Length: 567
Image 1: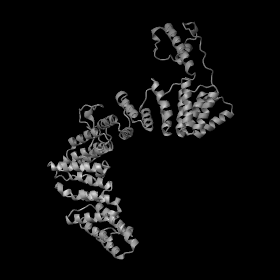
Image 2: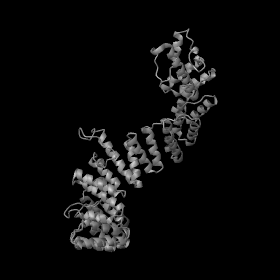
Image 3: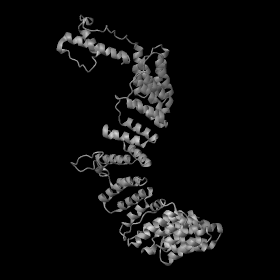
């Protein structure tokens, strides 16, 4: 290997021919494999055992190859010492040994340069490593593929894309063999420095090298490059090649990253395939519990739709659906939701999954479909949408024309004798609040009994959240509050906080105290409600209200540290 590429091949051919001639001399007892290079050491041994044997007289087309000259003993000792110090991680002493050898006039060879490259590479000094590499070439030594890889690895400390690409171009120009390590180091440098174009050039060269067999690390760096290029489709194709062609399993963190990119770019086929792969991982291995398949069951097959979500737990399936809920992939969301229902039945996971499914519909502006799914639920069920889901669906109705259209749709269903779910009206009320139509929000709230329903605390909250957008809405808000109080319709603590905030902005202090007294009879006011009122009365200097608030705070059982925080 010390001779370099072309010379090494010529020597191999010469030794093979000499070995053939030697077999002709010794017969079948002297065996060798045609697929392996005949060792020079064995040929020398034959010559030593048979001094009278003249190998040059055998059938060989090559001239006699002289043995390499004997090396300087000081150089041999230097290389052995450098090897020992490198394995001991004593890099500083390696540099000192080389300096002393140069002072003594020792001529260093390619092996010495290699140990110096390794020393600078391990110590994180890419500039010095590159300088040694150039000195090596200046002295007439032809760097081996390993020397190139060492230099490229040193550039991972500085992420110097320009110098790394110069070394890479030199490798291509000199037809130096590239390995996995070559591409891993180059892609790692490009990924860390966010250099997309050089990374794509490295990728193209990797695709043209048929003899390079990529491993898990190389595929991971290729996926990272695709992520930096914001090409989710390309990343999915790499994952597909790993699992379906090369049978290589990637880390879960890499799959999660590609999945997030697919969810963000709405790449539907990639989402389904990646969930299939994640389900395959869950079925084949689990660090805590072992395989989740039943004993004797056939292992899962990637690409089979029946396997999607089959081996995942409730939490994993729910997490899948929550992530899909932020996209418009409603068909895949419906499939996941159906698997949750079939696998775990009507439980809390089912209700959480239903919320995520509605968010997916809302992302696609499918409000009518949401109303249909809500109205399919039993009228006497205690199910209620979370406030975040109601707000998310209300965002899909950005104009008053759309709001009125869907409200008329609910009226039409009611006139046909169908039951309308209360959350449908909550969404309409919340949408009116978002477009600052507080008067229309009030009308719809007061029309809830027409649907044979009673406003829930969430209904009052949906109305109250819209009051913050209009300072002049304090009279309307207090009118609705008085009507709810007369009909024993209670709100949530957050609803009362928003009503008090609106009344304070409108300068109606007495109404605020009335609202606070009424809210305390049904639910404990929030900490922020008391803080809001205290800050207001502190500024006004009204001690009567301050004493009243202090009494309420003590009666509600706030701890001593909470009182100190309130001042």
